[in-house]
Amino acid sequence: MDVRLRKFLGTDTLLPYWLLLPSIVFIGIFFLMPLFNAIMLAFRADNGAFTLDYFKKMVADVRFIEALKYTFFLAITIVPLQLITALAMALLVNTGFRGSRFFLYLFALPLGISDLAAGLIWLSIFTQHGFLNSILYSLGIIERPIYFISYQNIGLTFLAVVVAEHWRATAIVLVILVAGLQMISKDYLEAAEVLGARGWKKVWYVILPMLKPSLQSALIIRTIFALQTFAVVLALAGDIIPVLAGEAYFWHFLYRNSHIASAYAVFLMVISIGMTWFYLRFLRSRMEVIRG
Image 1 (cartoon, rainbow, N blue to C red):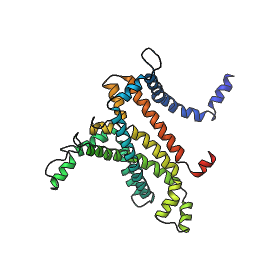
Image 2: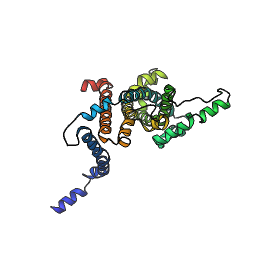
Image 3: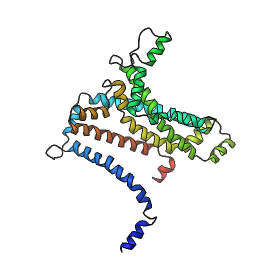
């Protein structure tokens, strides 16, 4: 029996599972266990009983509505901008012009920069004595520094966060769309040209419909990450612009209340699941609707 078991374990039958094992262990330790602990902290009182008090305190928090508002404002502003920009860059790179690979690497460069580092880079640009004010002053456009980041001008502060997050995270959408474009068979594109579909007609009627799965994946990933935006906001705006992920951080590390912090985390998870369901439900193709 031992010999047979050893032969079975050594065959190619279990090879895929052995290869997946490190990823499964990693996900279990660093994702599933923290997720389970967060849910337990959000719904369990100190005496071990089930409770919704922490969610009530979360909703009653004076910053909750503002954080919810700015989180959604950031998501509905950043995600469409990133999708449009990434699609334009992906179509440009996919033309295969000379130097397209260099431009792809250049566009994807922000992927190697952390959220906080990206926020600090743009802070050095938008701050009172930053690069942008210095350039505008040297060109004679302004006589005194513009306060891009201040309590007195939340609109400009919000715009600075949008610009920084747009620059930082568009690359991941670009990579997904470039991969999707490379999966489209050239036969379809050649057939479209034979039938007279060129330029924008080919993009609209051929490329975009076939790129829909990649667009759907990019939308889901970027929406989830946009709802969790925190480090860039913290680096640029501090507490001027509250967001849900930031409130979870502050409740855990500043106010030392892991229960309410976990309530914020669970609330964000529920929103993310809801948005994912929305995309999967309403962005399906006609064939998927017929089958499902």
